[in-house]
Amino acid sequence: MKKNDIVIDVDSVSMVFNMSKEKIDSIKEYVIRLAKGRLMYTQFTALTDISFQVARGEVVGLVGLNGSGKSTLLKIIAGVMKPTSGHVEVRGNIAPLIEVGAGFNGNLSGKENIYLNGYLLGFDRKFINEHIDEIIEFSELGEFIDVPLKNYSSGMKSRLGFSIATSVNPKILIVDEVLSVGDFKFQEKCKKRIAEMMDRDTTVLFVSHSIAQVKELCSRCIWLEKGRMVMDGEAKEVCEAYMSK
Ligand SMILES: Nc1ncnc2c1ncn2[C@@H]1O[C@H](COP(=O)(O)OP(=O)(O)O)[C@@H](O)[C@H]1O
Ligand SMILES: [Mg+2]
Image (cartoon, rainbow, N blue to C red; front, side, top):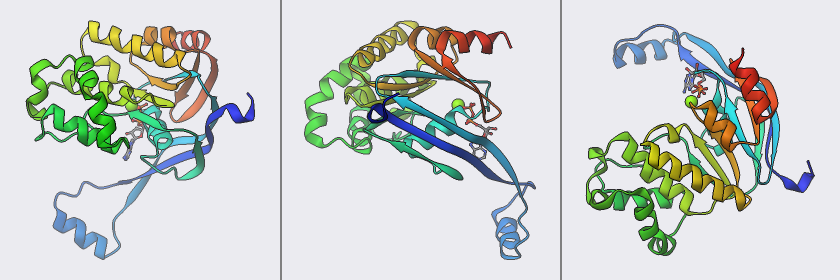
């Protein structure tokens, strides 16, 4: 990997969450214990010493059971969370498709949410005005675009989120399980758009329930187990090793 081709550099990243040990039923009890310094925490290590680099244009899948740390790692790369130790360097704008509805407001219409979400992703009004028709068309929401988002299904929200995030032509695209919602036809359309982005040298980090999808879209794959990296290599090989475990 040539040094100036590296767009994501994850260096010895660990993530430890503090979780309250006891079940505390009221805020009052919480405040009292906090004041007395008697809040007990148990620590949970979600990621342990993860290092890898991604070159421009690579499409990297992340596989692992639920709770293996995939979303935590993607959030750290996207800058949503800071790691407990280690660091991450990213070159270029990221379009993070992390959770359905992150950056959305249920009381606003789909169209208003395009502006809201667009600003959060760093686009200005002029850019959004130029792209809004295309975003709405791709989302296939039709007249629902003027309905408050709280009336959308999760599939509809993810269609909108995907349409916004991929309209920018980002240097790096993060897709965390958002393709598993929505109907088959829309999934195909999203896959096609990701494939187009790959052709334009976009770097993609991809998590999906469907190993078939990972195999189909990714060139490389990283396998996480309980927050540790088990394998990093050619997508087909890693997926097969993971499946036969
Ligand atoms: N904010 C948080 N506080 C405490 N634990 C968390 C938090 N976020 C994630 N975890 C824990 O970290 C582990 C990894 O979660 P996650 O990264 O979501 O895994 P995956 O995406 O692979 O299913 C899980 O055990 C989860 O419960
Ligand atoms: Mg996850």
